[in-house]
Amino acid sequence: MIRHGLITLVLALVAHAPVHAADDIDTINPAPAMAKAATAFLATLSPAKREMAHLPFHSEERLNWHFVPRMRQGLPLKHMSPEERQAALALLKASLSVTGLTKVDTIRSLEDVLRAIENQPRRDAELYYFTVFGEASEKGAWGWRYEGHHISLNWTLLEGRVVGSSPQFMGANPADVNVEPRKGTRALAAEEDLARELVTSLSADQTRLAVVSESAPFGPDAPLGIVTGKAREAVMQESNGIGYAELDDMQKGLLLSLIQEYASTQPPAVAQARLGRVKAELTNIKFAWMGGREKGQGHYYRIQGNSFLIEYDNTQGSANHIHSVWREFKGDWGKDVLAEHYRTAPHHADHRGTHK
Image (cartoon, rainbow, N blue to C red; front, side, top):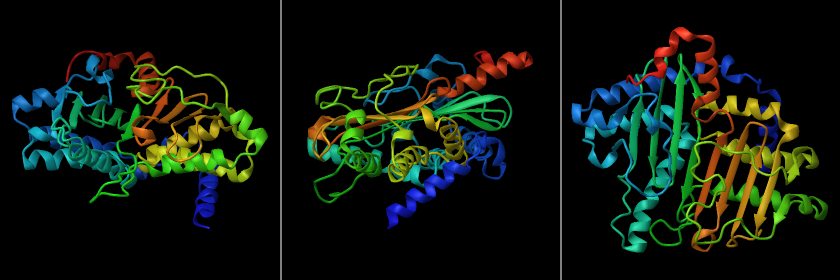
């Protein structure tokens, strides 16, 4: 009953979401709070730390995203004072929904689980980096990134609006914690469960369309798992799978609930704008599954429309290690909106320079 109610709600939200939703919801525009929080965070830092955390907007580093455990440019939580940490986490809170904040906090905490399981000191929940690009303001262009193992969140803002919120990567290892005291913790449960519920609800004819391979595209030793990897430009994948129009109403609801789960990481205004774009291309959206359909079997799925791509894989660690990502073919890092802005407003060309 609860699941049916959720599906009905999501169908209603998408049906009524305006295509240009971001233009209609100023009352919950997160950009002013994000700019204020970013400015406050940078103000707490010493010159040396600010040099680490604050880079020019058009630095190549802004596009240098990844999700493996490695050193990054930026200021990690590990090197912050309590005051700095509080300001950094306030910026993160201003940039996410309550759901999104819970997800990323849980993902980060899994580093402590891995540290205990593997007895590996390199697993460190404090090695998550904050990097601000450009001058945080309600005028001009700026952005920021929160990144560490299994998290890469990237925001681009222009003239007081969020114009880019991808790549949005979240992973989980373990996907389902099986040791105390965290046993049963699942950071990305809905991303797995909704997709499996959808694929197992399909008829034989629908399954022949949706399941494009009986094996996942990568084996358990694949370092990245998702097809697009860490590419700076997401490329449209094969146009296979089952189309939205080929699903019944309940299955459509499951697919939309799954898309909503990814979008809901962002603040409501940003999530609703994404759903508006989804509404505009429903007839072109396809869902493709590869691999086993039972829990514990390696699997992969993608949801692809004209403008966006969702990828998910769970093949490593005996199918207990998730990678998931939302990409925009033209809009990662707000590239499409920025390009149009610079084309039509040449007096803003200074934003393309190297200033902070």
